[in-house]
Image 1 (cartoon, rainbow, N blue to C red):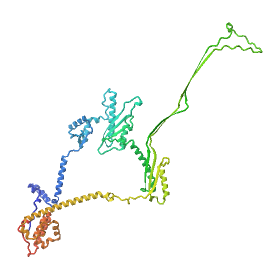
Image 2 (cartoon, helix red, strand yellow; image 1 turned 90 degrees about the vertical axis):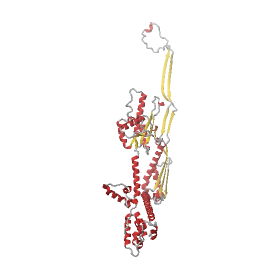
Image 3 (tube, rainbow, N blue to C red; image 1 turned 180 degrees about the horizontal axis):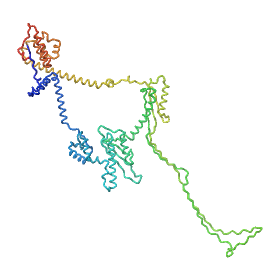
Image 4 (cartoon, helix red, strand yellow; image 1 turned 90 degrees about the horizontal axis):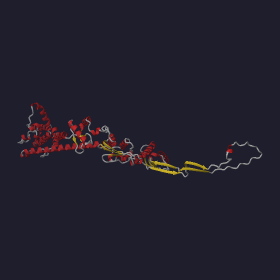
Amino acid sequence: MSEAVALPANDAPPAAALGLSVPPALAPIASRARSLWASPAVQQARPALLVIALLAAAALAWFSLRQPNWRPLYPGLAEADAAAVSDALAAANFEYRINQDSGTVEVPAGDAARARILLAGQGLPKASAAVGQALADMPLGASRSVEAARLKQALERELAASVEAIDGVKAARVHVATPEPSVFIRDRAAPSASVFVTLAAGRSLSEAQVRAVIWLVATSVPGLASDRVSVVDQSGALLSAGVSGDAQHLAYQQRLESLVRERLVKLLTPMLGPGRFTAEVAADVDFTENEAASERFQPAGTVRSEQTSRNSDGTPPAAAGIPGALTNTVPQAAQVTGNPPPAPAPAAVGNTVTSETAARNFEIGKDVSVTRAGAPRLKRLSVAVVLDAAALGKGGAKELTNIQRLVRGAMGFDAARGDLVEVQTRSFVSETDAPAAWYEAPVVKDYGLYIIAAVAVLILAFGAGFFLWRRRTVLAAAATATADAALPRSSAASAPSLFAEGTADKAAVEAMIDGGELLRPAAARDYSGKLDIARTLVTGDRDRAMAVARQMLLADLTAPAADPPPAPADEGEAA
């Protein structure tokens, strides 16, 4: 007795199912492909292969239909330069487009470098080439105002190019406001400047970079102070606001507090150990600027200059003596006598007038002093230190007093300034005693990602296994229903089945095979049960079905002759 097992119609090879003829040269390959296609592993993996094929087709369609990654050549080009660049790219057979939103010329990312080299060889764009050469085309005989405007424009372009070289700056524009010079000091105005920067996507300028931009512009313009330079980004934020004013004051106060805190840490760490104390510093700094001018006059004046003039005016004296010729004669010889001669009568004296003038200038003395206090002044310093009670040991209050004295020396304590120092002891809570959150556990920190990945893989594996098991169960139930419908009702009712109708599954059949139930006489005599088992195995595993069929044939040959199994009329259809 022999039975033939027929393959289901849906297991036919693809070429045969489609009615395609295979060339003789490809017959071995086609035969091998048919055997591979009909293998149970490929049949089970058909849904996965279908999904992979769909994904591959979608990826191929995306790669073939996707647009290239466009990149702008030169952002912010003028319209004339954009037209010239477009003509040059079209003449060189470059693929390009004009962005409808920004109006910039864009090329694929892979052609950007070659396009820039080509345009640079042709001197395009002209606006970029003019940086550093703004004075080359200045006409002869230009007026002084035109010359000043060209110089100012060249300076702004050079400064913008320097700012654009900073990392994170995509584009920059510099505006310098220089007032007209005046011969009067009171009418002179200081110059100012503003910098507009366009930052790259996801980038920002640090405080040090903003300060560098400010000093770069301030030192490039004569007479420009750093506090008269403003920096603005494309979102309208004033970046220079955090460099001067309150931000500088806060930074100075934080540096001062950090300096005192570092001193305390260096002092107390060798004594108590790390983590056995905590210190906080609060500095009260006065940033007010005072400017005072005073003039003091001396009560007593000082002689600055003195001028004196004297004038004398008088009439001549009256004539005396004997008039006539005797006036010019030689006088007689003197005679010595015992008694002196009488004194002559006094001559007549003329009138004399004398005038004297004196001018004396006095200067009032004054002292002028100007005082300007612009440096920050420390008004008060407060320090609070908390020590671990276990770190002091047996020293107690004496050790606490010594530490307080050391803290005062490290911070530069000044009682006249009003400094405060507070040192206390408390019991510290160790890190092991503090309750930690579940997400801070070492297992979660170290292996959290691996656990999540493993759970995801298990969920996917169980889902795929459940899908395949459900599909196989549905197919087995459908095959069983089809076979039962094809059998005559008399045959189905004549012989009892090993399983109830539609209840045979692969797990029960495999258990019977492994346990040797199919070799027992009861199973061998039940033809309907053997048909149900064969139908289940043929649907799921063809190779194992053939082995089961052999076992059934051997069981028929070794069965007792007194009890032959009933032979149904549709035996060929069952095979």
